[in-house]
Image 1 (tube, each protein chain N blue to C red):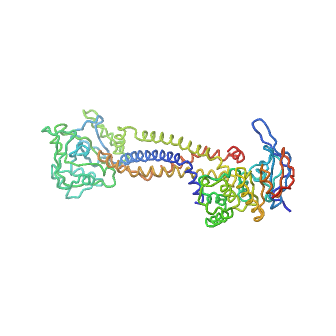
Image 2 (image 1 turned 45 degrees about the vertical axis):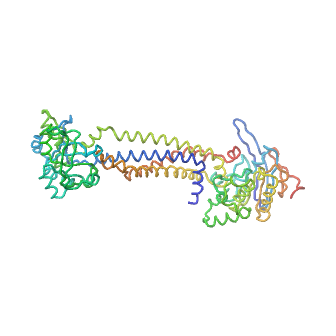
Image 3 (image 1 turned 120 degrees about the vertical axis):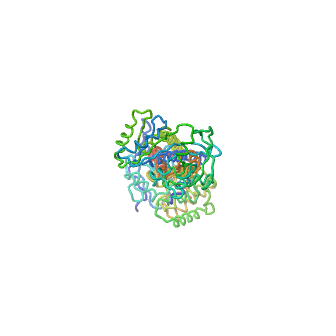
Length: 386
Length: 231
């Protein structure tokens, strides 16, 4: 602590340069925090996928016949099967995007009673109301919906038999997915039977089946058995674990990890050059000061530690500000992202810790050239030359 | 009496590119405790080299350098730094203060290397700033002080850790006559009242006159001067 004034004064010797360097570090760590936060939320979504649940879809993204249900149920190792179809639309204005999942009410909650929770009276209402829907608590809060509301839904794809894309539903309950990232998604669960009867096209089909299996270690074997049932049909299937399915969906966006790593890597490399150059400039301007401090009895190692502390203060302080900004901005971005179906964006502590570790490494590496010169600095030559 | 500084058969050679320049040629010097010694001589004569050797800033090519009872030419760089912090106070021509630190923070610098408490450091700083007559300028930065005031701060910094010996390289070289006299009188007080041994390099005959002994360095050899004009 007794060296703090000395370190602080060294840091602010060139105020403008320090401020500019700080701003560049703040921006780089803001970028790091934002991108890593988004990447982590995607990864969490994938990781939340279960290994004992298989998902069967059509590899060509077309729907699958509902008639597959009985055949899939008969595959050894499969204990329960559910299915769904999806519809995307919005409420009143386009920014109020809604993801509708049409399910068999009784079957769906029996299948996923741990993941999806709903009070029994509301479930019964859902089962017995053809136009009934269940909504997420976040959606209820955001759109100020409550049970009993009669809401319009304009489909973006999925016209009704009368040619209209306007659907109407009755909110009969609020379901939750505790502990899962999709808790924040603007999801509505609707009655498949009503949905299928009303829609103009693709009647009698579903988007995906989900199968619960007895043994996760036999997932590949069971998936192959399911796919073999429909291998020669007009609608072949691809069955994989829920987690693998999530990864495949994410891969459709692109290799997000690679993009994030590439952008962050480029930003940090540039930052390393900027900070290293700043430290070298600071060293050159302070050769005389360092020589005087050595004269007074500061050791080479002591001076290197002081320089390192200065760099740590600059890098760590700016990184903390950048990550703090990311922490403040991510929930804002998260609310927007959740409304378009990307849930759970936040800044995890692991990213904050990784950021601070990167800031420390940045300080260490950027100080190296200047520290090396300080160690080699000859007092006599430095005082004579300056 | 044991000398505060002894240079025995000291040879110093510098290598500049491919050229080897010999600055000191088997120089011998004994400085008794409490002496105020002035080293004079033309540029390049080797007087600053002598000062650097006594201050532990440089090492001889040959010979022995014993200061404050320790043979310092055999010490490592780290040991020398530690030794300097405890035994030598430096005063430079251009003050060499830290521009971003206040006068009191500059004076406190050598004390940061000690185990003194913050309160004790403050007390010592206050005391030496009072001694050099700058109590009212403690919170000022070097740029806000005159040349003479800056040199007083440098003197306060040099004596705050109570060193055995003060090494002064042209301490009045950048000051006007009146201010130079004030500084030299201050050095004389430190020598006479605080019993500090002082070695001062100067070009100025009038400044040298404040010393108790004057030596001329010429071509790497020492020549005793006549002290007829001593103050």
